[in-house]
Length: 223
Image 1 (cartoon, rainbow, N blue to C red):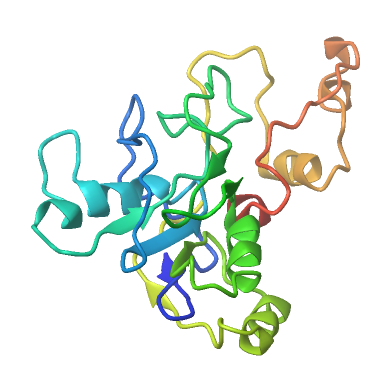
Image 2 (spheres, rainbow, N blue to C red; image 1 turned 60 degrees about the vertical axis):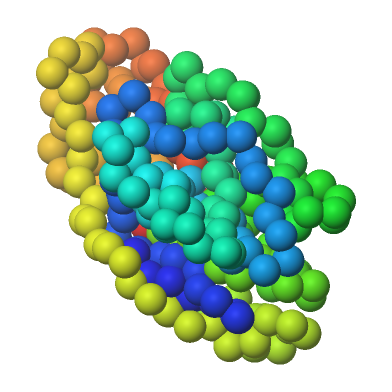
């Protein structure tokens, strides 16, 4: 993962999926803080929120985070998803225990919670009041996004810091009623050349393949 930013940094995984330190059963997402004017504040990708959460507030296993070291200013990384266990909204069993809005700085009005790499950098480029210091991204910013940042009042050129990199792989369930797929068939599904299971196995009665994917603007979806 890399980090880009104005006044600070934003994160992305170049050509890969940065999974961070997520553990089975969810991360350490807590109720949102109300950052002061001197705290470092970030928003963006749900894929990377656990990594920044653990770095800021420590882990459930007792590892110490930045905010537990007695620093005057805090690191506040707002979770992207409204699920306290870091499950994406499109996944089964997701909940809405966090507010869909956030207060980026104490005393300011609530804004829509940025969810995804695209939403994060859009929020950064529209932020002319220095409420956002960094964003998390699981993809590199586009040339257009970088140009917008450079031309935006109070934003400026983006700076990148890579934190981690992890390649994308295909997960396979131990038990499933889906037919075995070849690499060629997987590609055809992802490019929408194949849209029904019957295109792979005629005995499957033409069931439509239903995509369960991240929201538009998600860096992980782009990768």
